[in-house]
Image: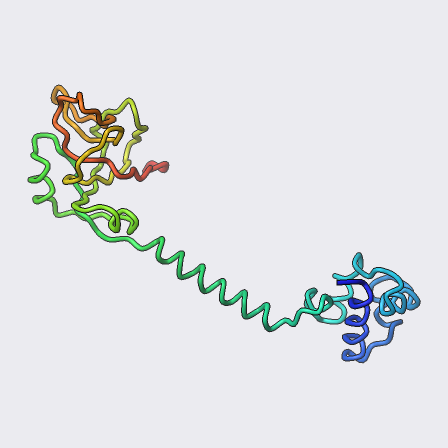
Length: 200
């Protein structure tokens, strides 16, 4: 939009506010002649437009010929959409939480546990037979595991080459990359790890 159009909007808002050019000039620190030049498009008002908008109690977009209501409606629509999307992302479903697999068959451990844990919906929507597991007792050279981290696993998902899998090796639990040459028993496929950075 050119300065002449902005000038016409300044004049329109000034007349609506029943202010003189001298009134505005005094409040923003210029001469009344400069306000006249702004209104007639002879000088660019852009460097003082924020001050003018504040004095005339108009949103800045008003001076560019954009009405306030459609912008507000669009912002509200976008805000509502973001809130809806955000709530969908944050939704979770409870799954069994296993604290230990030492001395337990995985199916028995899942069946016996009384604990549950919130699993993100993106995991629930894409995989089946999910359980959460406190992976403190697990060793891995391929993924970072910290105290208190929670792993989300699927016990019935067939592992593919390169997947991270939970397995037993020499009486220890490991997370490793799956390959067809692995002779160790695979318990479950790792889907995600919830990292805990705060220690109680």
